[in-house]
Length: 296
Image (tube, rainbow, N blue to C red; front, side):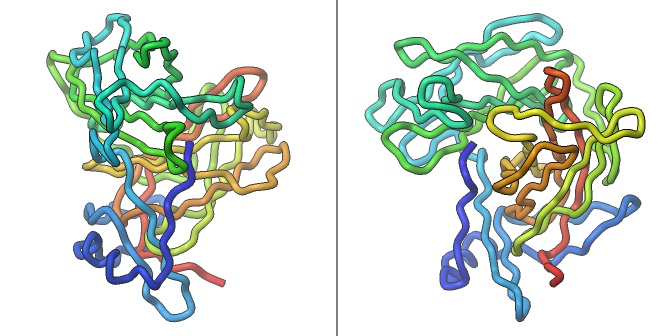
């Protein structure tokens, strides 16, 4: 997944156009209440802090001339099916050349696909297979009806910067949306206990560390897609997407530290994938940002 775009303070005039609705939230604890949903970018203008802007991604079906074009637009809840789509380039043709990431040029990943319901339930991280004509396909089963969002994260070979495009999918039926769990510092996944320290921040550099244990003992995480853990943040309401990148130079252990600078204040659902004993597990948190204060 690609690195988030950061702009420095000298771009303030441009950022204000897109961040005019961004306001100052507050930090939270386990019992804190979510802050109101904000605009898609935010900056910290407090003296002594470097202003940071992070781009919200996945909000558009078309960007920079590239379009996410689903060939499967209707899902059937509880039924296995093949989800197919194309990435259509500026020339109107399906893209067939992508830059591989998280591995070698021969064995890396060309595209990540996230499928999640609009209430952020039923999260799936999939790796489709591309045919020679540019058609991607992957087995997909959604367990419940509802409105879903498909997010494709990729870098066309013709670009140096990656893209994240999003498209809506519908699974007809009796849709019963779930309330998002309250902000939490600890969760469980497949018998593992996962805790986090730190919180996402809008408008300033921020780091978050997640730690994994089982039966009260720290575990040693195994590499998965070139890292000891992958954490995706989705913003409540618009499902703006951000991959929180692990800190460089990490060594094997129970902890993963990620860059937690996000595009906007508000409530996020955090999805951490980690590997242990040869199996990938998924842990989920809810987090609410502050205005972007860092502490030295």
